[in-house]
Image 1: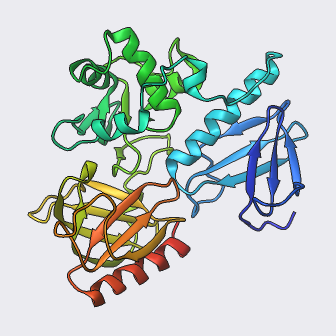
Image 2: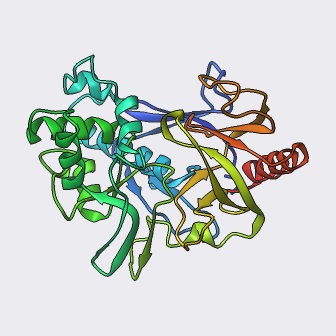
Image 3: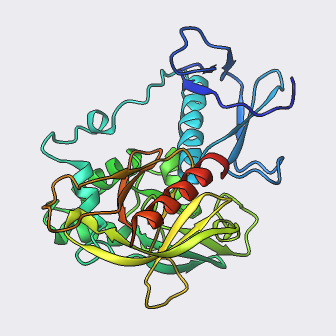
Length: 335
């Protein structure tokens, strides 16, 4: 009505979308019925806004939503599409836990498995892959995921691997990259996850980006590397599984809000990225599950909107303060 953008707490129901001014509100500000609705993503109606999708109601009313980051938008679009399909098919939609829907054994810890998969030495290797005149950076194939699960004795056979990988995908530990894997994740295949060499996937916060000629802009076409550099320098970063600390070169960009980290010895491609929109950054005095002499002084912690924790160490107290202030500023204003 007013052509303005406002942050809202959004709830997906089986037959509609409710939106609230605050999460704690008892009554919604409005509701969009999903029956007869269509969804369009990516949406190019707003050239300067990233991660936008459009929901058109049955009465041809357009509603635009902007997510904080690519994976969040794709998850919303995927679930809204499923809800609309259920309404059209006369079924009841409910986003149940993947563990319950596919009877995943309670002994399997998806979070711990995800950390093992991301281990820089023993985990799945992130590659630069090409397909359909596109280059996918920091990703891997579906076949590579199943191969790793087999080699790590996480599964007994590839059929079990498909079930486990589908769980990781549906719970957000893996993200689809490219048309083939995205179509399967949206229910256009027998399984959400594909054990194929041309189906690509990536880890959230891995620094994934796609480049090349494409009419489909639902990938960040180097966009996250165009923002103005706010601050850069070397910091000590905690490694996976809290086993070691390594020096990394960090580059903080204003818009989009990413903190990329690189090998300080050189290399144009980042080793990973921390999405800062909606994050919390604070100084800390010691490390959980870490011995005092392992690391101390000038530590700070970044907790992302998806509740991933990163621990960093600056060279001095003043440097730590500068990094915290810069990250806080970008987290508030960047996309």
